Image (cartoon, rainbow, N blue to C red; front, top):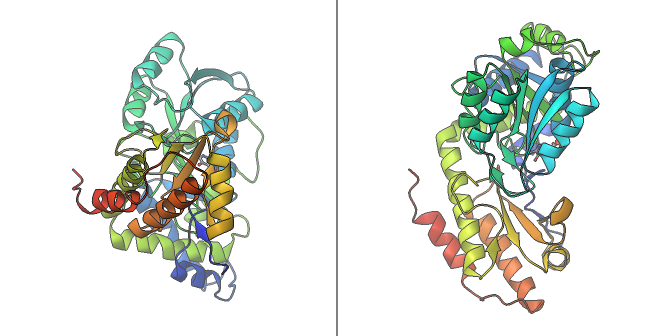
Length: 377
Ligand code: PLP
């Protein structure tokens, strides 16, 4: 059997109708075959980002879309505040520094949740052109309170740039209502599409604040002007845009609130199952942690190769210092509770074979109960 199961927090499983769209004949991007798809996809992106601003599409991974924010907003020597509580926060400190920003690094231990009051104190001590924050720190499972942090940043007159790569379409991200100037994401997570498209929702204030760093492909103004005429500045990956359009249609048909609720319940199911086995959670045991569940295990490395070799299941390991100490179950995008129970059942079998001290036969029931019998406020 070569059946594969993907439980990583990106890339994520792609629904068959989205895959089918990838297989349609390639059309020309400046022809009437593509324009209506492009227009609809861009409109749906605005709906999913909950913004009236333009959502700019780039043929890039999430990191590329994030680099668009850095090259447009950072000029050498400018003060910026970057919040880091994990692998991706560290990446944005490195990237903003690489472009010459004078970075105030607000650093937390991996697994901690950023505190808006710390952001307030930093901004009171030193102003910043922008506050850079990760919404869902995929390396730890922590989902930050972006709304509260943005409120503090807005009060201080700073722009707000959010890495929503693993959170957009899984947990609420109210771009306009929360005063977020830039929201960056990628196609391969909750948006249920293969990797390859990066996106950035960009407010007028952000475009007006662009700086002196040289740029071309990632220049926001160029892409925004072109997109407004439905005339992409460079050849877009038409098959990916067509697929993303289908995936966004699925999300909007389900209804974003229902999608968010499903993710809360998936998170509850994963945590309940892990705890029932007697495992200790690394990610917070809270509803906001609805993207990825991180679990402590001294057997993490053997577990990950065990479920892979025995069952064709791909789990994620830990990053950085967490390598070998945790495993992560991603549950963003095209997931239902039976995906969670599949992962838990396999984890249980392999951990038992590794002689781990776990309770057998309880995880699946606990997960199903947590999913079915919980109402989401
Ligand atoms: N930010 C977060 C929170 C992520 O989870 C990821 C990918 O896992 C990235 C950024 C980087 O995205 P990409 O791998 O698409 O460049």
